Image (cartoon, rainbow, N blue to C red; front, side, top):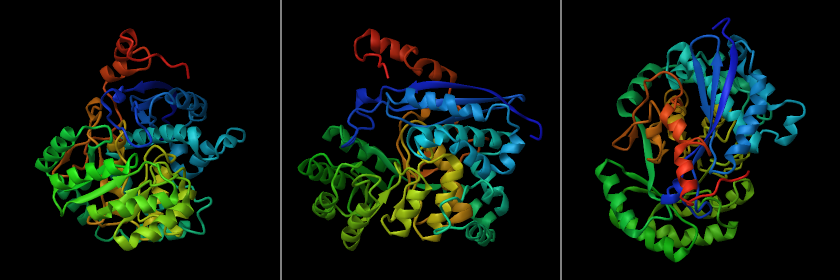
Length: 446
């Protein structure tokens, strides 16, 4: 690694027509096409690093262009120079003098940062011959802390505090690693509850999930109260009274509307309401939590939380009870590590957001690291799983009996099959060419 350089890159606009079957449909996003800018970093060795970020279709092209702009800052760099003080390099990538104005550290530019950073971590893990989670777990606390940019965090988590957390968890780490590998990472399924599904499909999917060992389920809500009551009645009938039920409004409501709506749904024994209102409304989430916590309903959010600074405010103000980090919304692994450590300090369980394209493949690594090296608490964790599109990855995530099987393949699980890349590149891949030729979709001009 001492002399290995990044010599080039390739970025592809990869999209899947999930809107045709209403996969991924919710109260706010009624017809998403799950999509991923797919970045390949090339080196002067035989290894390549792959990284993605995530969109719902048309915006993919914009993010691809942002990656094109930012990735130039990586080309020609020695990997040893990047990894020796990854936190400083991360700040360089997010703080270019003129492009920083487009964020800072949020929106399209931060999605692009995530793809680049994820590719660099994939490359690092491959060079060490380890899965990403194992690379993180095996790092000495000092090295791991050096990958984090602590700017704007000192009032919530200092570098010394992060170091102390990691050092305190060194004892028993090998035993926890064996336990997590043996038991797997606890998960919940979203596959049963997309908003566009028929009642018959809801019942069938619930039955299939129960037969597959699932005990934790999530349903989309928020478009129509009577419809939510009808659908949740079906789901509760199928999963029984004791299994965990979560609901997700995907930012649909006003603050008071969230409270009133959820009081009507409380009879279904809801563990959390996810994204009830604007993902930027920290005070609003706090009001909702204050009203619903006495009913046994927690507030979960984070999949659209822009950066560690916003997570800091959510955590300090007790505006969330479940911290849903996202592997592609935040600026890659480095910033997710910062939030995992902050959540540990504030005793809030980290329950990563999954689904989409490749998100489940990514979050299994972050969750495994958290369980072994930071939280050590299997009982409080629930990691999202949605059974969509994993078949397009060379090393897809595997779930058995409601738990992620800890991945053993080297890297960050981002290598996609060449056939999938060719078929789903937009708009030239054969999947899209056929849909366009059949008049089912029109090539966008974003």
